[in-house]
Length: 106
Length: 136
Image (cartoon, rainbow over all chains, first blue to last red; front, side):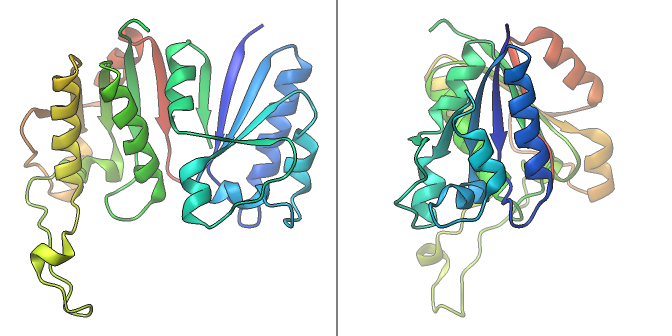
C-alpha cells in the first residue's frame, strides 16, 4: 500500500480536469492506497457548502482525507466548509514529502 | 525529522501565476526545517532569478517606490537561499539554460546557476522526494 498526497489547485467551475483528478483519487483508494486530497488556490471554492461540486462531494466519505489550505480560504473569505473537509496549513505538503509519500500537483 | 533533500520543478513565469505563491510557501517551510532543496526552474520559471528585475512605484495609487514596496521574485529567490543557509540547509537553484537564452534572462542572482534538464534528472535521482509544479 502506498500513500499519496494529491494537490488540487484548479477551480472545478473552470476546469473539467478536476473531475478526472477526483476519479484518480478514488481509484487509488479502491486499489488499496491511502490518499489525501489537498485543495489549494481556487480549488478551495469547491469546498463551500453552497458550491455545486459533485466531483468533490463524491470524494468526501470515500476514504479520502480532504484538506483545504488555510491561506487560500482566508484570501477568498471562505469561513464555512463542507462537512468532511478540514482546514490545513501549507506545512502539510512538506510533512508528506518528508514521509516519502507520492505527491502530485494538478 | 532528519534532514531531507527535495527536488522541485517550477515552470510558471514571474508575476503571472498563483502557483508560484504556493510554491514559495512550500519552499519556505522546507528552508525553515533545514532541508536541502534542489530547484529546477524551467520554461517561464527560468526568469524567477533574473537579476535585472526592478521594483516600481505605483503612480495610479499615488505610491512612491518605498510605499509600494513591490516584491520581486529575484529577491524571493535570494531570501530563500539565505533562509535555508541560516537553518543549515542548502539550495541548489538551477535555471534552464535554453529557457534562459530564449528569454534573455541570463543574469542571475548570486548562488544560482545555469543548467539543463539533465540537472533535474540528477536532482530526482539524488532526492528523497520530488514535487513538480506544472503550468496550467
